[in-house]
Image (cartoon, rainbow, N blue to C red; front, side):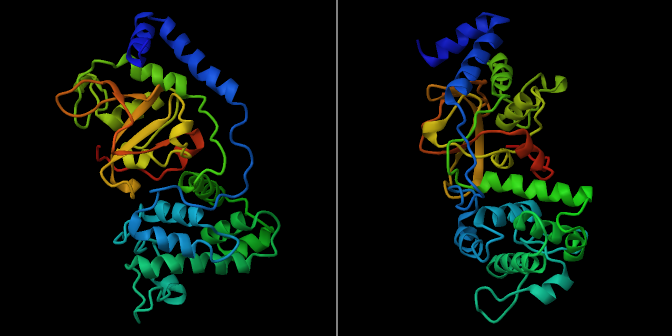
Amino acid sequence: MTVRKAWLVAGLAGGGGLSFVLLLVVGTYMTSGNLGGAAGRAVDLAEGSVPAAYQGIVQNWGRLCPAINPALLAAQLYQESGFNPNARSGADAEGIAQFIPGTWATHGLDGNGDGRRDVYDPADAIPSAASYDCKLASYVKDAAGDQTENMLAAYNAGAYAVIKYNGVPPYRETQNYVKTITTLEKSFAKPAARVDPSEQAAGAIYFAQKKLGTEYLWGGNGTADQGGRFDCSGLTKAAYESVGVTLPRVANDQYNAGPHPRRSELLPGDLVFFSDDLTNSRAIRHVGIYVGGGYMIDAPRPHTKIRFDPIDTPDYFGATRVTQDGARALPEASPATS
């Protein structure tokens, strides 16, 4: 039986459809055992997770000291600016690493050796961010607990607060910042072991399955005024929202909602992504929900309907196993669509 027929049979079964999906996903969850395991703090970058122009800089400078690594540095840059070298905030923070002028004046480096320290040049700003992290780590090196978490706490609340409380201070904002960056780190890291299955996957697939045959709508979120229609990332967002996981609106941000299983490790419910630039997750232009057997449910493009499509195409970028913490850690998404 083909994948298409198997899922259509499940759909025709009405209420039995969810049971079918649950058996499929729970079955893979049970047989997989503990696929993740404790592999220590992540180091290598996942392929394409950082724009190609910055990959080498992040990889090199992310090893500057033991408190940081390339995936952690990438997570900070994504959280601060979404890898936008021209970003500017209302608090006068500038560049890809969002330095405020006073901090840049003290800690900015001429990373590329051109004789200038330019906060808007990633070749200067990324090394400066790594260097600043390592200086903060040195200030709080005697505090109890994890050195990376203490460094991040110092970045958010100041080194004095970490020293005063002998570790991450009891400030909600600071604790949330530490958790956000260490969670995002996992979405930029090349997995050192197999990735645990998602417990929300069955419900997300069930939602998407019920939308088969619905006409595509650019910018569609499935609302009544839109006739219940979706675009690609609108469908995936709504599918995971149905099981209590809030994803960003656009596909290239959804890519960072969890770790990245290899093609051989895909399980039903994983998000699968497609791009014309396989070196840059920020260039992702399409997303679907994997259902097994090399197929996904997706909303392909205008003048088509939600359907099953194969994933093994030349523009296949990679996959994400969505986690609740991973989704919560993502910055506020823009209202743009994909």
